[in-house]
Image 1 (spheres, rainbow, N blue to C red):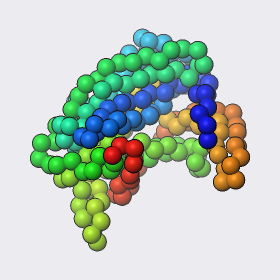
Image 2: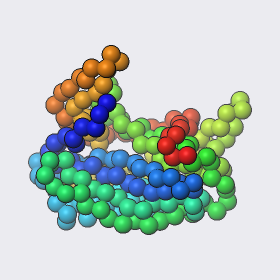
Image 3: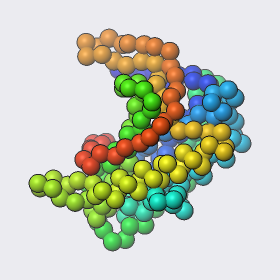
Image 4: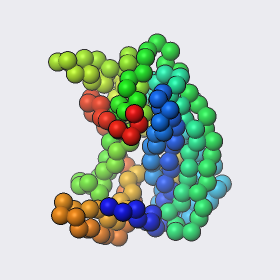
Length: 219
């Protein structure tokens, strides 16, 4: 499917967390945040207030019971910046530098293409109401082996989910919420494009599967 323009969704900002893997390849996590339930258009001031709350998912003080993701990663796994693009069809992208490195000194990195997957869930069923964040490769001490297959340790999912819960709670007083943006199109198996009106749905929970996934472009 050829590249398509970003959709217009009231009050929503596309937040691209950008970093590099130990192999030097880039990784990107794309989150979507909505301001004031879509009733108001966020600007640089509102985005600047939300920025440190999102970045705490990766680095800094942990939310209650949680753990920032970079504490799971070796020092060669780094963040660079977060790009904020309001989905209003006109505003420019705001880039905020965030140079930080992993702090897990007790492990070697898993292969750079390995990703732990955080699934964003809403109150509705279906692919249009579900999102996934492919978190960058953690250290080898975050996995266990079952039947010869590496799996995420239970604590990895538990603390990451609690970190998201803390982030969502911290966003609320700022009138922000994390959710799933449905961009209004998908490519069907026969090559045709299905379209609908783009929309945003607030997340109600997140889950993390014990199976790691692969992002080949991060090798």
